[in-house]
Image (cartoon, rainbow, N blue to C red):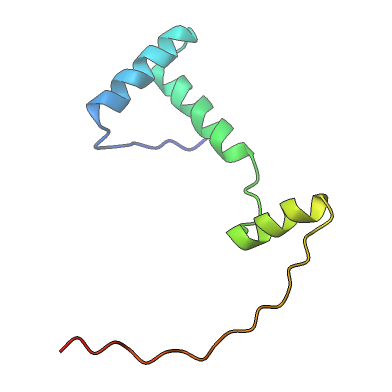
Length: 81
């Protein structure tokens, strides 16, 4: 097994780790190993864009057909001088 040293941990994080380890009846080192194991055991899902997630949600209810909207040409900017 490999070993690792983690430096510059915020005191509040260290305190929370100590409390969590005590609640589970184990050392801080064992608790940290368990946290890392749990965090890294899941496979990260494919990153999706918000639009893709919205389309997937709408597709479940049959989708929505929106009418085509004609657009006017862009107006000239306002002269503020």
